[in-house]
Length: 367
Image: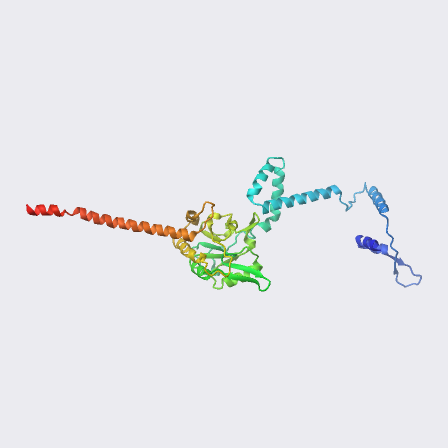
């Protein structure tokens, strides 16, 4: 009985109804036909195969296409699907250091062109999901809607990562999501909002963090919010790409706690240690950065990459900027003090050398 029901379900609806019911004729004039349930009989598998072969043989010369797909076509489609998925995962989820040797080996064979073609097609299909959602992430300058009048000179742009830079988020079963602001974050944003166009950049979706950013920016220090749709998906990481910011990239500074997030423009980024303990109120990373960033803005630096290059470590990451900046300032003050001391000493020595000695004056007076 169950097998009969499965046969009925698997067949097209119209065929099933036609086989299940028949119209009973009535001898009475005016009576409507009645549907009578037929007895369902299961056709043996060998007979079904024989009937199908007869139907295919009868349609060999026909122009009507059957819906049956050959096994070779199914295998080809599965091969192309799995190959495309493998290349997509290979290209978007593995690091370049892993891909490069294998890619070079493939290009040394006849499969190199095939690989490039499939990769180009996959990139085009995945473009809406791997690249920023729009060409200009920020509106054109000036921005009258933000209270900036026409003719006002553009400010340098300060892009601040949100996660583990400005705040730390935790989730538990009892309280759900909880967010802890990093110490001195309000002072940091209020002070630098006088010198920079501040952008808050989150790697999460807009629906998850927009309300959190609104509370974090309750004083309106930041001009813009950017979310995951503005990132560039590279090497399995949502990278904060500064190229489509619609600002002079030489005047953009990014602050983040993960070097992979700024792998496209490491020369513009300052690394800060991640803030992962919401109970820690002794953190001073943001407060210690204020003097350096203010000095950059007040100095009207036209290419921040040249200044930040002096703080780059051997691995190419710019870190420990406050300590290095204070050391440079201290060294500069020491050089100035020494120069002033040398200048004063030289002046005094010059004055003393121009005066006659006491012995000489005494001898002249005796004559």
